[in-house]
Image 1 (cartoon, rainbow, N blue to C red):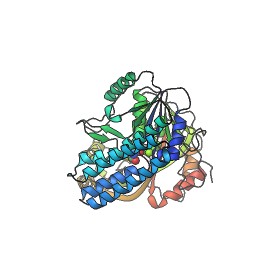
Image 2: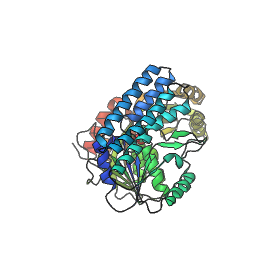
Image 3: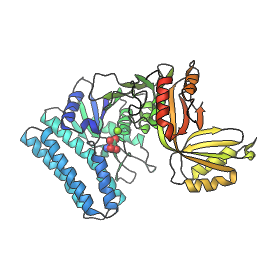
Image 4: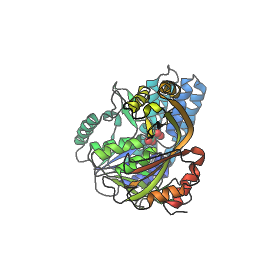
Length: 440
Ligand code: ASP
Ligand code: MG
């Protein structure tokens, strides 16, 4: 079994969706195809929810009508024969009737999740109609029948595995399955989702549950690149990464892969491939258990970071000091990314400022607290970084003119992170591209 996930841009135009149908019908291995909503749809659905939340029904109605027109135009170019177009029209009507009914009833969070689910429901049903028109045998599996999250909104993996495998057994002999990314049921049985960008997560969970041979994530770029192509002139795709390296890159800003999606595949040792729908022959990036090679592979940056420093002479030779500090962050459910310490001070970074004021207040008794906002974590990711000759010297030589605020290495041997003011982010990425990767 092979899992193939296609993102919004890969299904966002009729001709792209037709291209996806070609990609999934090559090779004899059975496949589970996971689709996102058409590009732009989830954003529109979010806007509908936001308009309803503030009681602006005319705005919600306007977005619904605009989206509906888009879908009608879409199927006219996707489908050829009249019966298929009729079927497509009925699917679209069903979902937009639902959205129009929501306009009439009182809005709440559970209803909002129902709104958000419409994108993936429609993309998969329309794709299934296209496959049918083409005479391609397949089964459409409703993700709501097997994708489940628990009371903490985390995937309930054992339930997913049992349910999915039971469903697959019921379709013995079938070679092609299509299902929705992103959507799931929560512990109350309501429609819910795996958060924005969650279709990658769905694919990885399904690949792990079905013990797939590979989990292919198809997007519109030829794999994970060594640096941000929007910021530096020349970037190259990274051919191979370990799960650890990929997790660091995804978490620290590489947009191509959702950070949560690594662990399920990693747990069941299913290789993940990042491939390009527009350039299917390109090797892309393969993520496996083994690191493959040593040295630096890529750099990623994460903005919106706040550095907090707590300085106290009482920290000198004291024990339990860090625990007390970390407890404050735990109390406010605020995750810490980087930590650096000296004998009398500790600096940590956070990216969520929701409870910043309370956190700072509770840290005050421990020492002098200072904060620096608008910081960026630049993460240099690879294997055995410090052991690879000259990497660290090249790295720091590159950053001679950058006021580095924090440096962290040793949490793993896969990552050196530096914290720089966001105003220096572009310069930092460009300098590293030249100094560490030798790319101009
Ligand atoms: N459609 C959802 C989103 O745009 C999920 C996904 O595409 O991964 O966030
Ligand atoms: Mg995505």
